[in-house]
Length: 276
Image (cartoon, rainbow, N blue to C red):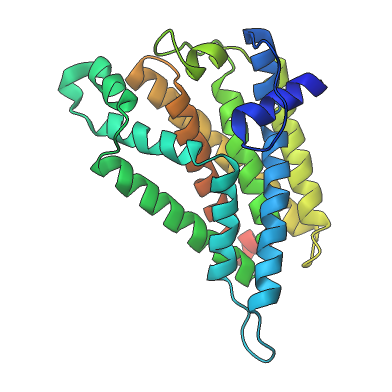
């Protein structure tokens, strides 16, 4: 388990953790099953940075800053992965933006290119903008920390689920070929349940006003993000013929964004307020 955890950190972060001497599919599968745990650790680091910015930029008698702390929190998440997930999102957007008439081989060829095109730049800009705005909105209603934890874990859970269920690789080389179909279904289900449990606990015991309704919101956010991730994985595997490292990066960023948006939302009807 410790070796799998170290492997997960070496695959998904830039933290100075020594990886294994030899990486095979079995170990890679166990590591990807622990991807949400990596998300939890990274989110805690980002939450500390957000808290520090809120304190250092706050002015007595004035409204607390939200956008700047949110931007710092999202920046920490990006730096923790060396920007690899955002780079994967950019490559994925460029590949999907290629003319469909040329087939999946052309899309994969575009994704392997070292340059970033217009579709990739637009995707990264809008995703980062949405993440910062959504986290800022969550901070303004005193659920920034729990939102950051839930969204980051669910984003990494998307990678876990993408590697389960016999998902094929789009081509024989790269990270996608190593991890595609490597996560056992049982491990994927356990990872999902663990993320739901942590989300419920984070919402219930949040220092900014944890309660049952916030715990329910956290679990609902995990479910919404998971459904979106499964749907996107199905489309991308059908469109590209399998999994790639860029697909994993794109799924992580998009699922994180969707989950953050849900955590930031306020629901106008009394019926929904009962659950949120």
